[in-house]
Structures are given as C-alpha cells and as structure tokens.
Amino acid sequence: MPLYRDEAVVLRTQKLGEADRIVTLLTRRHGRVRAVAKGVRRTGSRFGARVEPFMQVDLQLYEGKALDTVTQAETIAPFGERIASDYGRYTAGTAVLETAERLTAEEREPSLRLYLLVVGALRSLADEAHTPSLVLDAFILRAMAIAGYEPTLDGCSRCGEPGPHRFFTVAAGGVVCPEHRPAGAATVSQPAVGLLGALLEGDWTVADAADARTQREASGLVAAYLQWHLERGLRSLRLVER
Ligand SMILES: [Zn+2]
Image (cartoon, rainbow, N blue to C red; front, side, top):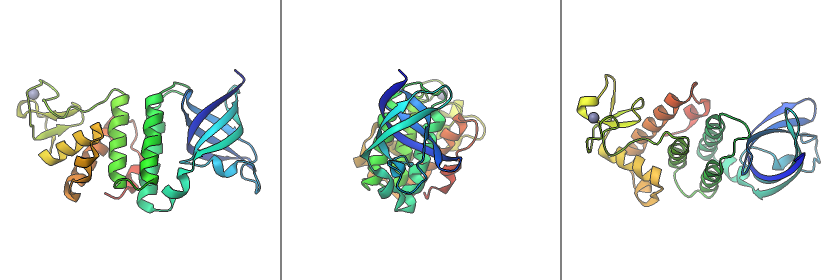
C-alpha cells in the first residue's frame, strides 16, 4: 500500500528545512504515524493550516521507508481554533496530545479506542462541555485503562479487601487497605475516589458537580499515576491550571 487514506488527529509538528514540516499523527487505522507535509510553511499552501496540532483531518499519505508523505488533507473537525483561543483549554489539550503520543510506544500499532478517546477529549474541550482539567483527567484515566493500567478504586489493589480505603499508591495501582499501605502512600478523600471513578466511567453528572478542592485532589493523583507509568514526566502537565 504505497498510497493510503486514513483519518488522523495531528499530535505535533516540527519544522523541516525551509518550507516543510514533520507531522506526528494519531491515525484511526494505522496507529501513530510520522509524515512529511511538504511546502506547508509557504503562504498559500494548499493544506498548511489543516495539518496543525488539534486538527482532525482526512489524509492521503504516500508510504515511505522512514517517513510517509502527506499528499492530501481535508478538515474533518477544526478543533484547533476553539482550543487555542483559551489558555485553560489549550494547556489541557496540549497535555491530551502529549499523553496520546507517549502512550503509543510503537509506531503503526493501531489503537482505535485511543484514537476515539483523543477525538472525544478534543471535541469536549472545543465545545467547552466541561472544565478543561476534568476533561484531561478523564482522558488520562481512560487512556491508561486502554493501555492496561486501570486504577483500582473500590477494593484494596493488593488483597481485594472491600473499601472504602483512605490510602492511594501509584505503585500498587490504586487504593490500598491499612495493612497494605506502603510508606509514603498518599491519603485520599472519599469524594476524590468518587470523582476518579466518575471520570473513568464517563459519569459527567457526578464529575461536573465535584467541588474545586476535590478536583484538585483527584488531578494530583491522576498526574502522579500517569507520571509513574511514563519514564519521564510530561512537560505539558505542569502548565495545566488545576
Ligand atoms: Zn489490602
């Protein structure tokens, strides 16, 4: 398949030479793909504005040895403008894109569920459906679940002892009972555990009703949980207002 079509969200762009860009894409059917978009930095480029971060595009690509080449790009959803016009949405959106890139360890490994999750998160941000940091936290929890790291929020993650439990540890992957509480485990409030569960399940009635303190507590745990599972910290997460 030297020439192929796919849908994609643009995760990142880098300058290449005088007028080109390398674009990192999360595609619907081909996983994460890096491709060259030629001439896109020239004024009057046919599809320059379409291959920018946050944009959902329909692409035609030519398969190459190291990098593919974008030969056509049509906009499906122009999330970029709406997200970039607000600092809170922009920083949360940037963290969504960076998380998606970091959680796709291998190029060209299809993950339809992650693709749909990214599109859903960007749409929520663009539509101002919920507090941006909540959209980000829901995305991170669900993306981690897809990657096989769903946190345990009811029973103790070591022995299964039914909760509610007051301690949370990233290493054990969720809440733990007093007996299995390691040194340095964070204490967690019941409202924060409830919010994490609501975000994981997509129960927005509960999530939207959480107070600011509970949101901050849950966000701190989500960030710690993600960072623990990624080799290096996520730069963009530090910029998100919580
Ligand atoms: Zn236990």
